[in-house]
Length: 287
Image (cartoon, rainbow, N blue to C red):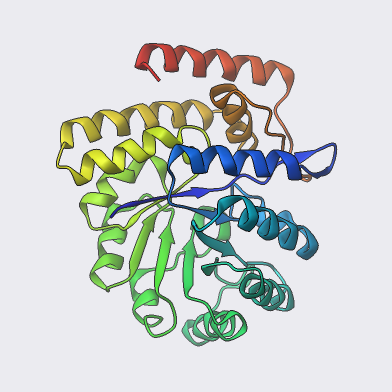
């Protein structure tokens, strides 16, 4: 079964974690039929959160999500924080952990392997690579991944490179696509599902995409992918991840909250402009 894993937003309000907003958001997404949550990734502000905030996020989501699959991103600039959050993830009932490669410094093969080994040892949980080189500055290639197969169970690949996705699948890894314009092509190449920022905004569409694909209704799946991509492209014209948060408020009908500094929220003019665009797309596409 193909899975929709939400790259979950971590909303802030007046400079503080919006716990009530986070809980309500997770409950809404559970009702929409998603399969799980990827906590504290890029959309979830992971590298901007304190270790205390990360513990709070894991606690709240675990309580609200029930038995859904929960993958906690533990990546950080300081290895002590990575280890601490990995241990917390195990204690707080996460299903698995994930991490970007070591930040800033570019690891060689030995350092990369030791990094993911340390996460596995600290958590005792299945480990996923989180590959987002446009943010991390380091592309975990299929060659790197081939040397990590004894350490990790899978990878979230956000490159949008379908050839790379196919190579990860060929290695026997559990692959989740992280580029929302390429969900369907990744499924065709054997991906397990999507870890998706757009699943915060239109989870029902993504669940339908998975089901249509599984039932062999490729034309319908293509149509849904095009609708998701059209919304995603509009959002990407504004500062992200804040634009995803505002799009969630616009299309899901409840106040979510905003991002944490040093990121910025959308201005009122930007909010009004994006709202008009999203509503126009939703109307024309019957969303």
